[in-house]
Length: 453
Image (cartoon, rainbow, N blue to C red; front, side):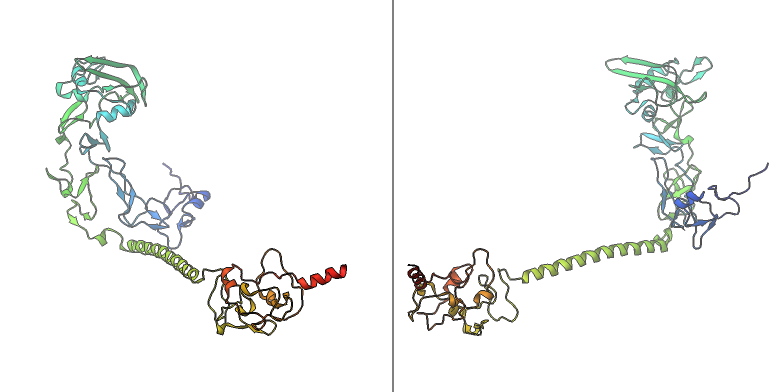
């Protein structure tokens, strides 16, 4: 017989190949960085498989295939291969489904599960009375198999292993083909029992209409070929470390390969040897995982610390800003006042400032008290706008109508020209402590009127 020669790119590792990730497109999507021309790249141990990660073998003990039911066994990586361990299951005879079923062929067998599997999720197994009443008759509605053209009666102890009877079944099975019609019987003896069944064929030899092998039929009893047999027929003694009271030294399960699969941290043929933690798993892989985890945690903690520091500094700086309308300029020795414009000081003797015209006056000297302002000053001259001086150039602009001085004189109002000095009452009584608008020059106004006449 001629065999096809090895072909690189078919996805199968053949003689002379270290790896085969498939076609160019398949390698580009997975395995291409580990495998090139069916040869592992430098530093790579593998290119694909359930136990291959980033071109390296997964550590020993890493789960690669989970158990799918109570009768299955989870598989772990061996640490020296990219492939997951062969798929195995518990040896036949283990109890499952809360002691309601028994494992057989890797599946948990009960009559209720079988009825749902064939007819639908809403279907349930018929009452035990249906089996006891019908399967012992040996008719189409109840039997333990067929011998040519006749139905076989069930022995009394085997009635639960014969024709499968369910309640509330549908007219069409979920799988296979219905051979004949659905048989249905309703027994009424003070209670209604729905007992229905049907022959569902997958092929000429497989009829799903009978109770499956491995289904429990009583305490420590199991169905096998339409017979109800004791569980001792499933011999566990073939697994090492098994006695009447325990299996695999009590630290594992017996597989369908008649080998003990040990629990975590237990080893040996009979699972009687305790394994240290650092030997059960790949120590280097664990250390790498711990380092990676620490790096991630450190990065998160560092980010939180930086954000907290920034927020703290921002909050501290905000608290240092005075809560007023104005901020004191650098170099000013006077206190902060929210109702004074920039550059204006208090009435203290040490707070006098040079004005833009070279004259030095305190705030109380520049703004007379409203109680002592009159139309005619002490020297008999009419009051004019000239007392403002250049203070208008230094004050803050205020929205609204502006009052322009009527005189370009730089004469200022001194304490000698006013009845008394101001005590700053205007500054404390007005929001904006600016001088009052100039009063009309009555004398000049009278002269202009006489000239017109």
